[in-house]
Amino acid sequence: MGPAIDASLYWTDEPAEVSFRRVCDYLLARGLEPVRDNVGAEPAYFITSSQRVPRSQKPRASRAAPSKVGVFCSWMSTEARERGDHSPIDISWGDATLPDTPAHELQQSGLRDYHFFTDLCRSLNPLYAELAGENATECAYDVLHGRRPYAPATLYCRDVLLGDDASAFWSTYVYSESLGEGTYGTDLMLWNPRRKGTRILGSSPPERGKLFRAAVHRAYRSQFGKH
Image (cartoon, rainbow, N blue to C red):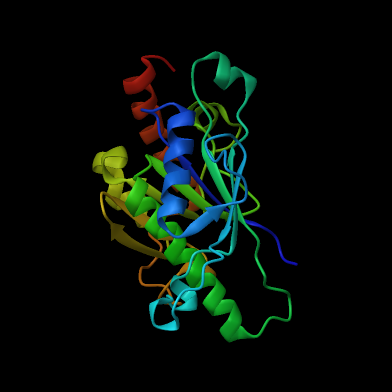
């Protein structure tokens, strides 16, 4: 079994328990059903509905939600918690791909992840969100106080977060697209729906990290009034 896939979402302007509940409601609306009744309690687990769905109503495999999904509050530092920040919400699912997976199956799995993540972001509009293999995004405090600039290979963020730096920031990604109130970008072929680069890299991931940290700094000061 390959690594798990993590879609982790962060909001500055609402408590983690509110974000957690909204994620659970989103999964219910997508037709998944809870493994337990107390879906408002962390962690929560969902599986594909056991009810028979007519074949004509089933989405294409690349548009379907993952069959088993877990929802958790992500790790955050003690310092971040003491300063009043709150954890991102992590949505995790198994990746059924293996090293010898045929190319067409790998492509279908990647498209499923891409469509699921972008629909999550379009529907729930986090401040920023990351799609990664066994990795989760960090809260604003930990982005600002990390040892290295935070430069995710696959990211969504609201356009308002980046402001005038948006063009320079998204030029660091191989692929980017507008998505509701934000933008999605990736360097990874697996999660690039066009399977090729549509932009020439104008800067580097370190530059991306600097621009992102500056944007998060502005948002953090606006929300919490401190560094």
